[in-house]
Length: 478
Ligand code: 6PG
Image (cartoon, rainbow, N blue to C red):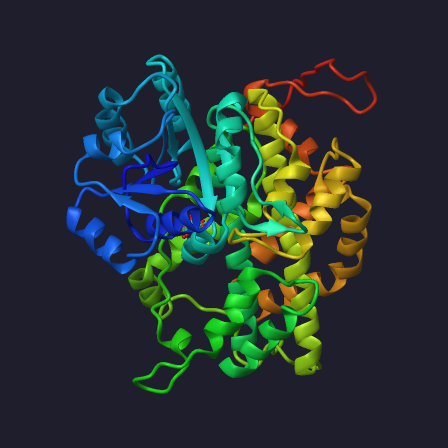
């Protein structure tokens, strides 16, 4: 093929391969390179009729691309990204564009952006969500970098992205690391959603529901307010039987959650910015505790829970009654989780002066990505009608929903607590809601304690703000 390619992709793992097929399917010619040539050969052999150019060396790959070159790297986040960039630099021309489409840490993206700009090259750090299927059919894309570089990439990104109501699920998020940052929070929210679903499942399981019954509940929920990709796949996963034993496959899977780091990065960033993301926090910590399986099994023989015969999950409650209550607890907690994640994005966006638009960010999460959900339409509307919304919970629609669901939410947290069923994300969400809406918290006593032992001073409710006082507290002996 003598024509130069419109786009190049390095890294033919699952996401890379599917993205290539997606770009090609929109009419672009794509060059591909993989460190192991056999992978490239196999990929090309599988797709003989497509407009693909396979390169055996990076030099050949770079030469096969039309300028300014648009090269997307789909390799493991961290050192491999730097290694590929270093190999590319001597081969590229001024203004060529490198796009990192992996789950890179946004500070790495900022560093690479500055480094490559210094070399006259252009860089885009783009979060890409949607897994294998999203990559192939249309992901949600969160690109960060200079607006002028975005303009060059826009036609390709918009054509490959998922579409909702005709709008592509991609916008220019902001400069530098803004795209990867927003993808990181997307993943934090993804962790929250997944944990909340797991807590609902766990309550049903303890209440004696069969796996098929639970599949039915999630399938039904997917036709209502909770409609989302993660609820949908949960129903399907619960339905799935193991071919070997005929058992539901979910019940045969070891209860140790993996994680690659984006959730933990989100927690660290929230702590640095003093933003509360307790639901996401609970979700990350739940994965950590789950992975400590040996300790848990040992502790299960030592540490007591509620004695048999206490509350009883279904005491005085029909199965349908419990399902409705858990539905509401999940819905309310989900609102809290998004309120927290969006608060973090807002705080960080202001600190970095990224000019983030929360309404447009919510809009590109409506399709393609793992957290795609019907209720993102409502979040989009909330920020479109009030771009300076202080907290999602205060939007009239969500305020009312939290009000309607709160009784069931509280009951689920207490039923779980009385029966010794862990529901850290449900209860962290409720704790946030009750703390946020409290005009007075017990921090007055905390201030007294601080002043007592360290003369840290306090403000008084009966004196103007900004005046600080100290009390001579009695001496404590011993
Ligand atoms: C996505 C996913 C994707 C990946 C997660 C999984 O948006 O498509 O978030 O990026 O599946 O990184 O993360 P864990 O391995 O940490 O669960």
